[in-house]
Amino acid sequence: MKKYTWLLSLLLLFTPLSFSLAETGKVTLLNVSYDPTRELYQDFDAAFAKYWKAKTGQDVEINLSNGGSGKQARAIIDGLEADVATLGLAYDIDVIAERAKLLPEDWQKRLPDHSTPYTSTIVFLVHKGNPKGIKDWGDLVKPGVSVITPNPKTSGGARWNFLAAWGYALQKYKSEEKAREFVTSLYKNVPVLDSGARGSTTTFVQRGVGDVLIAWENEAFLAVNELGKDQFEIVDPSVSILAEPPVALVDKVAAKHGTTEVAQAYLQYLYSAEGQDIIAKNYYRPHSKSATAKYAKRFSKIKLFTIDKVFGGWKKAQQAFFADNGVFDQIYLPGK
Amino acid sequence: MSNENQEVIINPRQSGYDPTRALTEPPMVRFILIALSLLFLGLFLFVPLAVVFATALEKGIQAYGEAVLERDALSAIRLTLLTTFISVVLNTLFGVASAWAITRFQFPGKNILITLIDLPFTVSPVVSGLVFVLLFGLQGYFGHWLADHNLKVIFATPGIVLATVFITFPFISRELIPLMQEQGPEEEEAGMVLGASGWQIFWKVTLPNIKWGLLYGIILCNARAMGEFGAVSVVSGHIRGLTNTMPLHVEILYNEYNFTAAFAVASLLAFLALLTLVAKAFIETHAQDEKIALPPAHEQSRTP
Image (cartoon, rainbow over all chains, first blue to last red; front, side, top):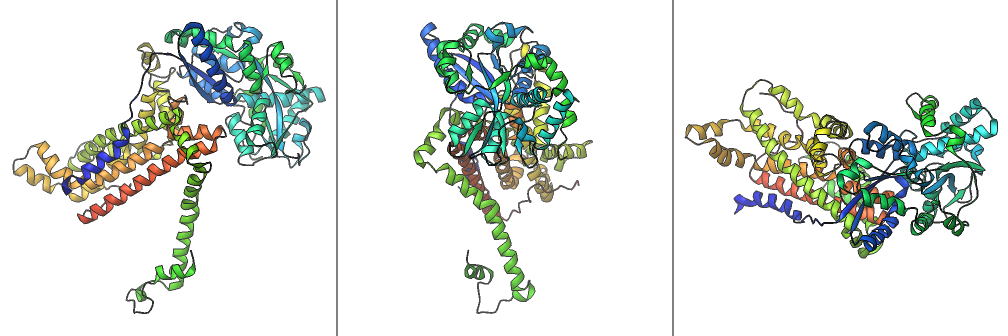
């Protein structure tokens, strides 16, 4: 008996393996998205599955992957088989078109409003009572104010943050040089750069690092609602950027999976009345007039500028600010 | 822990004469050393572990059950167990084969093999993951061939298994090499002289000699495979319910402000780790009964 004790213990080690993999014959889509959309797409996917079932009788299952926008684009290029990409900014989808040629370069013209069914903006999240008295971008460069924002190299949200600050300074000082000085001193107040927007929110909210978080408006609303209105409050700056996170069908992957039709319907459904409603409920600014009117109270009227007007579009901005040895690399010197 | 209790631990025979006493450090030094290590253990091991279980059960047993039995959590558990199982089986085969080759034969390149076995210990897990992306990613060396044949490696289960196998690769052979070196080839040679075949020698002589060391290695390998984060994170693609292992699922839940669920799944991992420790203790006592010295983990082997 004793002879077999060791064999027995070996077997016992693997007994929990008695699960079986269940496969069913329904259509599955993979939506590869950026960080703060988890809650939005969980709601939207359920609604779309219902709609698609009623329309075609087919069951559809949508899988979701979240991460920093740049990181997710990299993963799609490396072979993560996304049927649809819903990333934080247009440039990340441009890169997929350029490097992996998985979709045509004019992808942004295929859906209304530059393929952005929802927009957002960049606001500040501060501790309750706003102990450091932060009211506008100008307060972020004051000595002793610790600012939390993610890494523009990997996070789409961080790039919007950067450009919003730059745009503010440009409007105020009317000079590129002054804007550069302003943003340089702002990043001197940043103690840590997380790789994604959600990571930064966790750093600020959970770990209590920093006095102010520069965040997506939707992310700031979510943090306040999930973690208690008695702890944090949102501060709207005088001016900010209109953030346009686009969506796109990844043609080659969808064609390979035979899911082109359902993937297209999925993206179009974002523009429908129900889609827009879910979008607004999740604190994204809706695109349709009726939903905008319905949820007008929820979103404050910040003066918003677009990336096209101030920076001449994403390709230019990416090249000038975030490419290797671009402005960000020149001004951000950790520990200095 | 009170002072009196510690005094009892230090000196169980307070009234009687203790022959070891004259030969060891003064009581004060012993007291400080023991107090320090207990304090350290409590602060860095026990408190975090207690926090994991306390947070997991914060909202009651029902919330705990829901978190653990939720669809994505179950799929993460399933994937982790599957990955661990495959890694342990493959590395057991490799570990026994390599330990046998290294301790029983002379061949050119032996030192290189010994060094290479240690590679996964020295390379950062993130780099190990990236290696597989470079090899099997769409832009990698085999990417297009794989895509043309409709095979998925990274961002799917095979990639996760590959990364885990790579990371846990040295555990078993590292455990067996010193043990088999110490035992020497004499018993196997005796078997051969008596006319046993290769397989007979393996099953009747070698395996019974190394079985406890082998089990010990399997347990270490098992523990690491379940907990691996870095390498798996790079090749996973983070698809909910499909390519998230338990550690990745914990991270996602945490990022969703779902702390109770995050710690519930974390407590499952901690529980599995505790089970592993129990198994390890069991094996150690059994090995002692049979008077087989287990080599310390990851002891550097000498080349004979």
